Length: 229
Image (cartoon, rainbow, N blue to C red):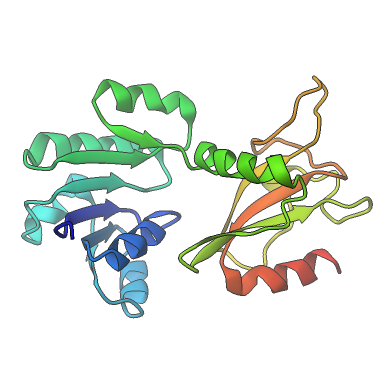
């Protein structure tokens, strides 16, 4: 059995906590850092096996808490610029770390990370690859993709007359729960005759589109009922 690694993750939401849980389940030693003191306390009260530190990497929170040596650092905040700053800080101040990785929201930001030898993961592109495998066999995406029971990809087909038809992605009225992310839209063909698998915030939904949400399983049924009102 592989020896346990010590992994530091900065950013509880939207991806850090999910990553931390998966790694902790694999018996890795996980330190999860976030600048939101209340969020750290509220989250740590319900979890075991993960050390929560309140603060920021660039403000030396690791050294202040005697976390000076670790194997992997993952920047998982929702801001590419802040993630890059944290990665560079770790690179310059923690010489023994083996891997430095970051979540990257904007593909155009990736060049700056790559230039500095930082591995990147784009969640939307990763989700698109998974969706493509399911789309090849079932474009309606009736199967759900689960991640250790903590989250899932939920497909919502936009029906004619739906409350979502004609809505801009950035303004759609899905406010039943704060913990969801829109990861993509499947449209059989766009105006250029090509399939659409991802969409930005200005994308206008049409009847027949399949909207993909990353959501907690407990909210799946509640969301379906809300959409069908």
